Length: 175
Image 1 (tube, rainbow, N blue to C red):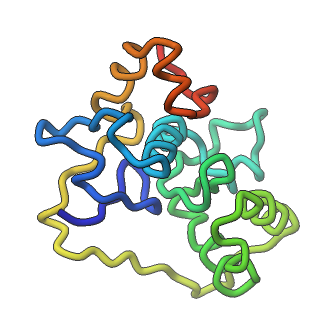
Image 2 (cartoon, helix red, strand yellow):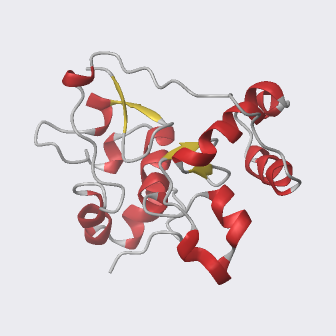
């Protein structure tokens, strides 16, 4: 099995470390801590607006924000981006000093500052998304849907089991 993005481009996971043979998320307790943290955080971020759009429009005009299609950075310091603004982030990361913040939660705040100050990718700066053997990658869940099996697993856990996972679940919105 290979690496796969789930729901949003950016974070990549070992497919067999995340999904069981039934196509559902493996039990969280069976994942390594980094994968578990990213999966739970990803489930909270799917369906959220693009950070750059939000910086432009805010709560008062949130309907103008595009939904995020990509996620970069570390959990709780991630940057969510739509297709229109992903190039701005990649340009900032590669050309404006963002790379030195790789692995740091501060990356989010520093990108937000740069973008809010008018920072943008120059005209003609384009991204190429390379897909290796796209036919062999399973279809990712729709970003507006939860990750298959994750919500049910978390709802069935008691407080002791949740505490043992040592995860921040405050952003999850289970109905």
